[in-house]
Every structure is written in C-alpha cells, then in structure tokens.
Image: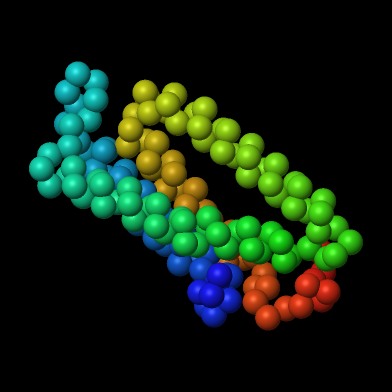
Length: 148
C-alpha cells in the first residue's frame, strides 16, 4: 500500500504491464522455438531456467501492480452513491475472468504452448494502453470527490 500511495496507481499499472509483456513475450519466444518431442516442447539447459525466470517475473510484475492496485483503484474510483454496485460488478468481472482463463488455458495449451503465452503477452500489451488512456489517477483524491 505504501508504494501504491507513494508512486501512484496509474504508474504502477503501466510498470506492471511492461513487466508482464516482457515476461509473457519471453515465454512466447522460449516455448514457440522449443523443439517438440512427443507433442510437447522441450526446453534446454539455458531456455528451461530462463522460462522459470520469465514465469516468476510475471508473477511478481502482476502481483505487485495489477494484482493489488486494481483492487485499490476499484474501491476508490466510484462516488459514494454507487461504490457498492461498482465493487460488485468489478468483483464479478474478476471472478468471471478467472474462470475463463482457468477453463481455456488447458485447451489452448493443447493447441500450441507458444500461442498461449503470445495471447497473454498481447493482452498484457493491451493492458498498458488501457491503463494509459482509460484509467484515471486516484492518488490524493478524496473519496467524496470521485465522479463516475
């Protein structure tokens, strides 16, 4: 919370998007160029640990930015009269999105591993521009001053 308050919400989201694009882009390249053995990609002694670094980079980039900041912003961005409804819609959307990713990931993984990470990299790329154009900074704005 201290970092979010000090740096600001929007810069956190933008930095997180960049980190997620780098991580998912790395996984796209590593799995997309890996040799296939028995229908599965085989990562070598360099690409295997590098894929692990990319996966962990994604977890950190998401966890300290979008994973926390989006909930802070969601609780701040609505005026008092509609905060409850806004939070409900935001939470339902988050759970629905989790469900879609959870159900679709194994299916997409069976088609092409590199494609899955490429798709995730694309959405992370889109999230950068979404945060840049659509998200308003709520740092330092009183809850009573929020407008829909």
